[in-house]
Image (cartoon, rainbow, N blue to C red; front, side, top):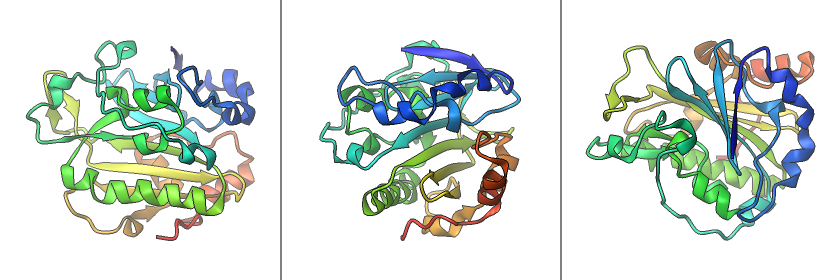
Length: 259
């Protein structure tokens, strides 16, 4: 397992991995990560990029919290048969920076996945790594098991129904006065975002969900990618041609999940 320090100016150094690596993910414990920097968000601040077999996590060194999780999801991967492990644990590569199990005990919050375990059934290693706390954020139980789960399932249905792969970027919105849990002061998000990009269709959709117990259907919270960029300070899909990036990011709900 590896990690690198990235910032806005260094991201170009690894773009050469390209899309090919995304189609070469293995399906056992020796599988590699998406290996594709092209669709990783970039930021002006220093981001530690944590590479795992199934997804990549961006961790803010300055703010000491997870900023995003990104991965490529394909139809064959959703036919995987690896069982959920529930082996939640601290990420040794972040030296406890993403929290430890004790931070969540008695907090009243679920350990909510950013890259969901349900998308990692294609690989033993990917499934196991999805339970690292670097892929986890405190979530209200009804949010985690309600609208968040509905959005994850709808994304999987889109991939299977259309037989096309997608890129996904997910992360928390952490306000300056965020509530924290545990001795490591893990921040609680005010919102969660998820961006889904279908490269073949050249369409994307972004969701910005208030982190509340019950908010109804996720379809009410479709926003433009531009809006997520403005809130997070991140730049998504920066390596796409400018004309495509501008049109896609300014639209609202161009990609339909058919909820």
